[in-house]
Amino acid sequence: MWGLNTLFLMLAEVIGSNATDAEVFVYTGEGGLEAPRDVVHVRVDPSVTSIPAYVFCGRRELAEVQLCEGLLEIGNGSFSNCDHSITKINIPNSLRRIYDNAFFHSLRTPISLHDDIESIGDYAFSSCVFTNFRVPPIITVIPNCMLQGCSAIFSLELPEIVTEIGWGAFYYCYCLRNVAFPPNAVFGDDDIFTHLNTNTDLQRLFGSEARIIRELQHRFDRLPIHKLVYYQSYHQGMLLNLIAAMNLRSGQSGHYAVCSTQRAIIRIVWG
Image 1: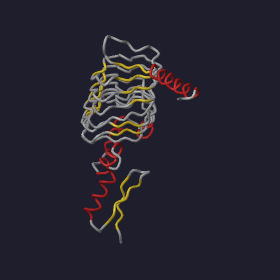
Image 2 (image 1 turned 90 degrees about the horizontal axis):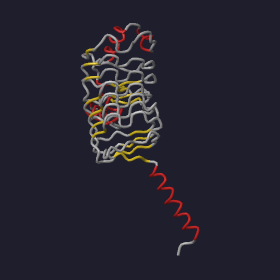
Image 3 (image 1 turned 45 degrees about the vertical axis):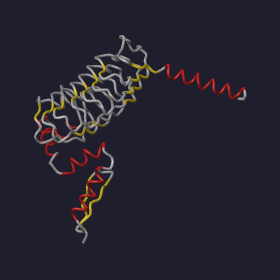
Image 4 (image 1 turned 60 degrees about the vertical axis):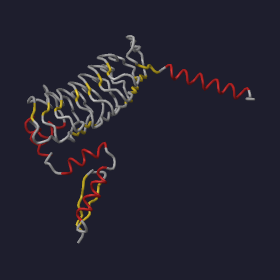
């Protein structure tokens, strides 16, 4: 027999559990069910493969988004205009497409995009708050205004295969400094950083738009370090494995070491 205190504790746990579950809005995409305007926590059901346009637009108290495996695409403006309320979100490995304005003015947290994402739409992450962003390695075109208004971003990683960078891609990215452009990339407009009388860090460093582009393409000089640093960002241990292979290939003539703070490779030749 359980004591009275034990029964009370068990009842409290059940009530607490039900209260927590009740606060989570489970989106199934069926019956035209609309998310409450004051929704805080959304869980997208595993049966959903596509989130429709604007379904969570304007939910300014939405703080947490759980996306399940099986989701293939996030529609136009699906999570837009949430007023930077989203502080927690996961991206499932099944996701392939992120459409225009998907997270416009909504994210206040870093977001990790996996390698198999095939496309990103215009303004998809515009006016979001994070300090770094990595473009997946099979993306060849940076969409128009992709990061426009991301005033806190400092570091941007682009894959080597990027061939085109859209207009206004980095408008109002005042703090952006750590970035390099693939040398063969073409630009959809003369203004990808600057707009009107903005005063970004890159403008202060290099002056004109043309010089910014020239200098950032010069940074991406096809050295192996760029590819290594890019892949290390979201593939923990890959850099160490590559260095081990380099050591094996070099035999006894030298040794490669990693400086984790600089994320650089230093070759030390023994005397």
